[in-house]
Length: 233
Picture 1 (cartoon, rainbow, N blue to C red):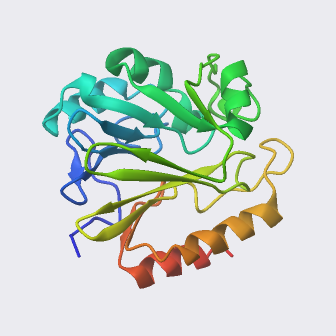
Picture 2: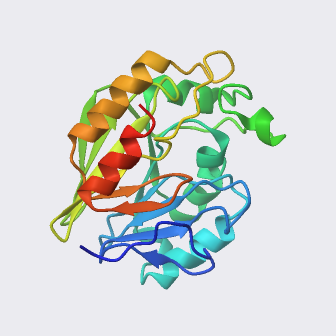
């Protein structure tokens, strides 16, 4: 099992999780940034989430520190619509030329610049209307990179169109379940507690070796991953 941190490190430098996976952004790249992860696969690399936009300069520098050109980023996979995960989409896409992928149930809020459901109001920020290049309707969809394959799963609950992503790296199943912890706000954020619990049960069933979470750090080992997810059931 590769060494991974259980807390966020200083995001002025990337944190290596496996030979293919790095954390390149988070609350220390900018106060309102959720975790941002890099799947490194040559000229078909991908980013998981985009932060608030405040830390974009650091994120771009960290991509280069991982040995990539900015043009090597083919996809920006958005786990859900909330501002701390999507506010940086426009600036990252402009710098990299990547295509943005999001589930249709959340894409509508980002595309329209919705201030409430994206939680931009919570941060006292403006959510710019943001074009989504690839809108996914399926419950499961695969994206081929070069040697790696990313699988997207629809896991509603925290938001109407939340998604999780998995990739196999060094023989380990890495799960990007960004906001496993919630919160659930059925009015402002249009969360659904019943769907959230079902989605958590599904994430447990994936039996992942490593969990890359959005705010609580990185968990290594099947038991620790399952234990963290089950703690919110």
